[in-house]
Length: 358
Image (cartoon, rainbow, N blue to C red; front, top):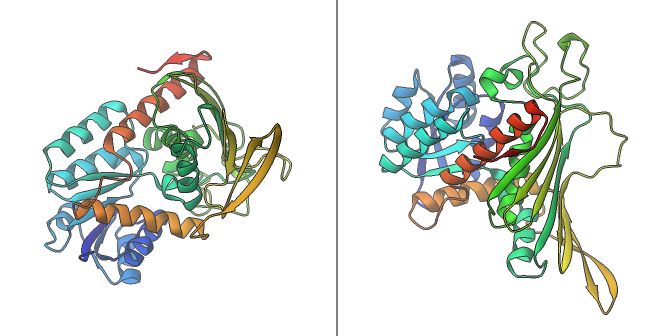
């Protein structure tokens, strides 16, 4: 792959993950920008790039061919549209934006741009996810009836008190953070059937009062005691899809669950086989019926190092797309559809009843 110059917009915690994966995949990080200049300088120093003084100066940099947007959700639309207007190729972190209307404006900008857009939905690039997709597409699982997707932390609220837990900036809590990944992967494995209705419930119990929260893992730094927590920290959703498939999503940033009783990952129940895997795990477990007996199988996946392998695969696809050698790993339309479903989730949770996806 010809070396691609990358600009990183937003230099918080996830930006280092992007930078490392990009460099491993043959990109050259050219410039970094963040509204907090110290963050941009720190990341630039780490990766041998320059720190831009503004979004506009980063986009004007002659060596920046592509941009990753990894800013808080409330400024996704602004930064994404600016990058596309500058005809840069764009890797846009999920969720696509705060609202469906903002997603529409990004899609329209992508249509006008010479650059191409790939959504940052990294879970579908994991080795285990790819193997499960092979099993489904090869017909070995048969028609899917149910998919259960779980991502539950006992204590793991990110950036407590900051933008992550402020609805006006993030768009929501654990569902829009972790749940969107699970939702996307389940729909991707099922071939993106149309979601007809959503029934959801949400709880907000552990993040407030902020001063009372305790956890050894503080993604995004220590809590801001004077900050905001007005989002859900646990949620369950049932998606009813065209063709009869039902998808259950169980997600939590914090929950009182005994250790080991609920395995994270996806469970696919089909007419011919059942499949379970942890997204960044090293194996896929399946059960098939032969001659009236059930046979359990375990398949090791390659490469086994799930987290890094998934990010590298996502960037390889991004590079191939830029080079005209393939399609985006996740499309703008899929990003928009996820926002439609997520909006129905929050409406259902607020009203306490099933909602049609509009």
